[in-house]
Picture (tube, rainbow, N blue to C red):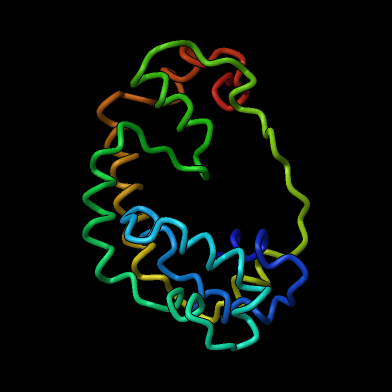
Amino acid sequence: MVSAFKHFGAGLEASEIPRFAQHTKGTITKLLAGSDPELPLLCSFEYKDDCSTGKSEPMCESCLESASEDLPVALERLKGFAFIGLTEHFELSVCLFHAMFGGTCFPVESMNMRPGVETYDSDELLSELDGFEDIHDNAVYAAASNRFWSDIETFKVNNATCAKLCPGVDAFSA
């Protein structure tokens, strides 16, 4: 949520994050369910242009609809993914991919190809959420995380195996 706000809410005050959070909750769940594949992205893109003003546009109202009905579909589709990685464990995800599908890692695979510019203080934004929780997207994340760690165990991925699969990647070269 904070990352999406930092990207799509450029130019907005940090105090706007609670409204943005309400407006974009369930985005990942809705995307995975595919009931209206463009809507979740439009909810993020259009937020600062139309919906942040409190207008009662049809698209804005659609963004605020619950993702409850989409959650079972999203969770079922997630099961069909051949691979799941976690950005907060990026190097480990790259290593897992190679453990599952073969090939040797190249150092370029662990490079930050799209470094961003920090425009907000993440801690400030998290405090602005004031306890907001996106229950549907959190459920999707929990399922994805469980699958990731299960695959890590199944494919016996650890620092030693990653050092062999990914020579030259600093995270595993110790």
